[in-house]
Structure formats: C-alpha cells, structure tokens
Image (cartoon, rainbow, N blue to C red; front, side, top):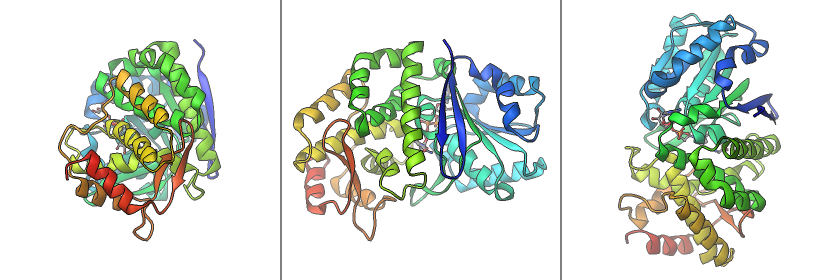
Length: 368
Ligand code: NAD
Ligand code: GLY
C-alpha cells in the first residue's frame, strides 16, 4: 500500500505528515532533505527503546546522520515533568548540540510533548521531528505543535506552540502496542468524527473493529482522516484563539478532571479519560436540551461496542470533578468553557456554561 501524505499549513510553519507501514526503516532518507545538520539526538522512553530504538538509529545512520547517545526517559505520564525537561536539556547541552541539531521524539504523546517543549527552549529553539509510536500520538499529539509538561496544578499547564519539521508515522509500530493503549488512542479518532464529520462516524461504526484489530487498510485510513482533520483545524487556528482548535478538546475538560483525580497512576490513561469525557460531554449536551438523546445513545453504543472505557475505574466525587474542571485552561474569569454538541459531527465551544446545571449533572454521574 502506498504511503499517504498530509500537509500541515500552520501559520508559523508548514510540514508534511507521512503515513505508511514500514516508514521507520526509511526515516533517515526521508529526513535528510529536510534537516540542515546531520547531528541529531533521539529522545524516547524505556519501553519504546526496547522495541524500536535500534531500528530507528540504524535507519538514521544509514542516511549519514550522527546520533548523539539517545536520551531514554521512564515510560509514563509522570515523565512530563520539570525534572525530566531539565534532564533532556542538560543532556543536549552536554552533547554540544547546536542550533541546527535536531531532536527526534520517538514514542507516544508523553515523549512527543516533552521533547517538543525541550526543542522549543533549547538554545531558544532547535528543530524537532515527531516519530509517534502510539495510536494516540499518531492521530493527535504528534500533529499541530502543542508541546507541554504537567505540574502539580494540572496537566499541560506549561508548554509552547512549537511545530515539528516533519511527522513520520509508521503504522507497523502499532503491532507492538498493548491493546489497552490502542483503545485509548481510538477515543481521539472518534473525537474527530464527533467534532465535525458525521460521515467519518458512520465509517467508524462500520470499520472501528478493523481499526482496533490492526487491519492495515482500515488503520491507515483512520490515521489519515484523523491527521487531515487535525491539519485543517490547526491551519485555521494554530494557537487556539478563534474557537476552532478548542474543538479538539471535546471530552477533555471532563477527562482531564478525572485524570487528575486518578493522580496519573496508570489506572486511567489519557485516551481512556477522553473516551469517558466524550460520553459525558454528549450526555451533558442532552441534559441541556442541546443534543438529541438518540445521538448521545449512538455515541455511547459505539464506545461500548468497541470496549472503550465509559466510566472511571475509581470513585470520583461530583464536587472534586467540578473543582478540577474549574481549573481547566479554557476557563476564563472563573467561567467554564466546555466543548458541547448539537449532535454527531456538530460540536461547538460553549462559553459561560450554566454552573448549576453542570453541578446537577455531575451529582447524577458521580458520588455526591
Ligand atoms: P504514552 O506516551 O505514555 O505511551 C503509552 C505507553 O505505550 C507507554 O508506556 C509507552 O512506553 C508505550 N509505547 C509507546 N509506543 C509503543 C509501541 N509501539 N509498542 C509498545 N509500547 C509502546 O501515552 P500516549 O497515550 O501516547 O500519550 C498521552 C500523552 O499525550 C498525554 O500526556 C497527553 O496529554 C498527550 N497529548 C498531547 C496532545 C498534543 O496535542 N500535544 C494531544 C493528545 C494527547
Ligand atoms: N489535542 C488538542 C490540540 O492539539 O489542540
């Protein structure tokens, strides 16, 4: 099957996303014309390093690149921290990387987010490339230039908009991805359909199981459509100032609140939280009289049919969910902004959400 290319024309930079099976083996040849220096440094995590690091190094060396010793971080959300950011930057400085040297993020969204942020800051900005190896990172986090770390105050609260030079997506890397991680990534795929593409939702209803089973054609198509959808949104509103990119946060305000309550200890993955959040966003839209119950029912059935998580695996109190939601980045002057839906493919940014209605909705869905 031929590779697919999706072009991202963001205001600050444009670049291509290459999608195909086996792309990793030719990563060096693909990157050579794009990068000014042969000096690179791969940042990855311990789990991905075991499986994909050697092949990546070989592919880059074969094209004449001279990789610095790879920077290998612990796997998991806790790695998106100030401490690990400092570790990456100090390693890079000790390797005497210069302004043309390129950081290569090889891994999931955790590695991509922190490496991108390190690249944005190192020497006031060095080039970086995303080689995403989770489904979530291939359809979402590697595209669009949001980079960040977490703090004790919440997720992704410190970061930068900083676009990569290229995104290389090898769908074959997903064959080693645990099934749970695949399902978590799938939630971000459904998200695109629910934002503005009802036809894609119909396609997912027919092909979602094949996507999750790793069927090459179905998987490539789902990744291509998702990347195109994100590329279009990022081209229209790179820095989330026009109420367009914010739509990508469908399910995220509920989801981030649950992730924070779960303390990022592995019980609830980011993509799982997004799946639960999507269901809650549709149910709340129904409760406000905005969305037909039939559409919310279809969404809930789809998530259930594909065995996605639709309830937090721990007890959460309605008040603590509300409190965490108030700390969301989209909140303005203490007023909550949520992404709600008028139906499948008809999501919108809802400002100044009725706090009493939200509190009542949370009381019904969480422990009082
Ligand atoms: P992750 O990076 O933690 O990866 C999940 C797990 O899969 C890790 O243990 C990793 O080692 C392992 N793994 C990765 N690739 C593998 C492979 N091919 N085979 C076997 N194991 C593999 O999690 P994620 O779900 O990829 O990313 C979640 C992060 O992405 C969150 O921090 C979230 O905030 C962020 N995110 C960012 C954006 C953005 O626009 N920047 C968008 C969505 C999510
Ligand atoms: N995942 C949200 C964004 O990229 O804007």
